[in-house]
Image 1 (cartoon, rainbow, N blue to C red):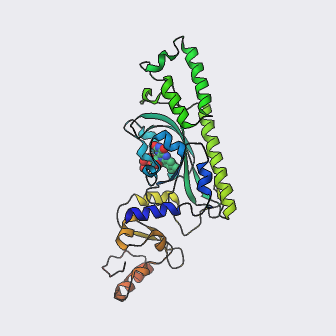
Image 2: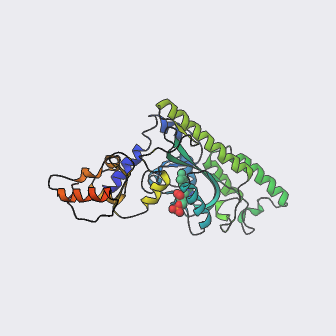
Image 3: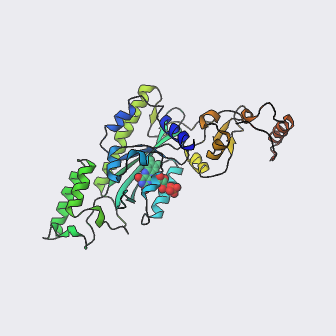
Amino acid sequence: MESQRGTTMIEQSFDCYSAGFQDSLDELPDCFTITDPYISGNPIVYASSGFLEMFGYSKYEVIGRNGRIFQGPKTNRRSVLEVREAIREERDIQISLLNYRKDGTPFWMLFHMCPVFDEKDGRVIHFLGVQVPILRRPKPSGAGLNLCQDGAGCRESVLRCYRREVHSMSVERALSLASGSGLDFTGVDVDGPCDASDLEKRKSTAVIDNILTVLVHDGESTGRPVHGKRRSQPGTGQLGASLNISLGRIKQSFVLTDANLPDMPIVFASDNFLKLTGFSRNELLGYNCRSFSGMDTDSSSQFRIKECIQNEQPCTLRMLNYR
Ligand SMILES: Cc1cc2nc3c(=O)[nH]c(=O)nc-3n(C[C@H](O)[C@H](O)[C@H](O)COP(=O)(O)O)c2cc1C
């Protein structure tokens, strides 16, 4: 039931785009994921085939999961916290991260993430993450060093060609070339740091721009414009993406209502509250909590709640509600 609800929300995540939207994304050769901060845990709702190839997972293994599953024991916690902070502040970040493929192989990638805004109300509706592999010479013990035994200059020139080529080939080809060239992921220096080259940085920016163009173009065609930059202030009535993500970490059953809006509608409902009441999030957001009362709900309890709200006082009581 719980996972069904999650699946439905993931399917609905792209409702604001056209029917052919996912096909347009599928055509892009790059390695990227899209998450939905309005679903508990900010899960991946789209993973490109380039991404799946690079990480070695199937689509079904990553959709619904948070991007942190690709981190491992040697992933730098400070970098992860920087990503978390960027999400909280709803801003771009470009940072090197050590990730792990499904088979456990660590590799460095340049992670570039940006929020996607609803142009009308300025809310973040998705986050877009692009992963560009950083391909580097392995430590001296690496088997591939004898690929080019006539000095560092030669190795560097191979690397340069290699990097240049990687940017114009499929991820699968890049990976197979990498593993045959001594630049394979098994030889990476997991202790880092591993800075991305300017080329890799430009590449990730170009990929972000390209995908945003697809999103913006599609949004225009459906009359639900999105944008890579916030153009208006977030509207009232819905919590910001970052607050949603933070509240989603709380495991208790609770709702939050907005006292500044007419009829104090629910603006957040926790996963455990949905579980307890059997409602879906869409059935609750925007409605007043009185929807849970029914025929046998004690009117004195309702009156007491009303009174406490008016006097801005806390209130604890037992009352009959309906699922
Ligand atoms: C769109 C998007 C894609 C992400 N992709 C990755 C990824 O490929 N690898 C990774 O290590 N983290 C990725 N993350 C970051 C994690 O999901 C998470 O935000 C990060 O670990 C910080 O949060 P935490 O401290 O709660 O783990 C991604 C985040 C977003 C928003």
